[in-house]
Length: 225
Image 1 (tube, rainbow, N blue to C red):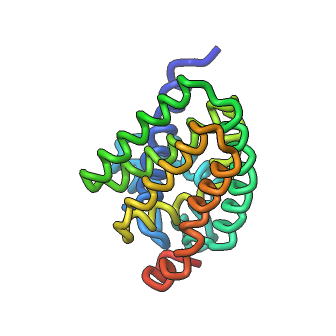
Image 2: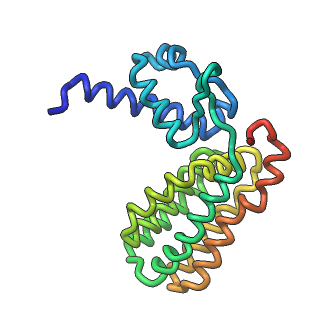
């Protein structure tokens, strides 16, 4: 039986974990920042136990590093890990979009189209954080439409560093129209049941950050290993 205190601790841990992870991902907590369990527990008004547990989870995801005599530090973006995550996602997503173009149902296509409408609205409002969320949801809808929920979860775990680079790209490069246009191309190819074009459009989209990564590193060297 799960006690009330265990539920409370679990919800507190999730709250701390989600709060810190969001702030790391969107750059509110910069790479290289030292984090204190006490400061976080005071700031978020929780005990130190859920903070310690959240730190452990973020360490396992390579967003935090724990160093003797130094403390807990927000890791810098590691381009080798970015490349590995991109490689995994690119090769899986090639197969996913081909399957989507062959099998996706009308209801799933309607959800993708609704997502695109919201992306265009976010584009007008200039909200890169919301655009990132919708970008993620757009790709998740493709996996979900193919019944590949667990595959999506695995890909997301592998792509934490890649996602940090994507968010950095959105925050410093405001040419967001190209991202929404690429999503539109992927959607139309899937809706047209054209697996070849869908695969090509998806690969072009996933390689966008790869093309710009050196420029991003030159502009923000303090964020990178």
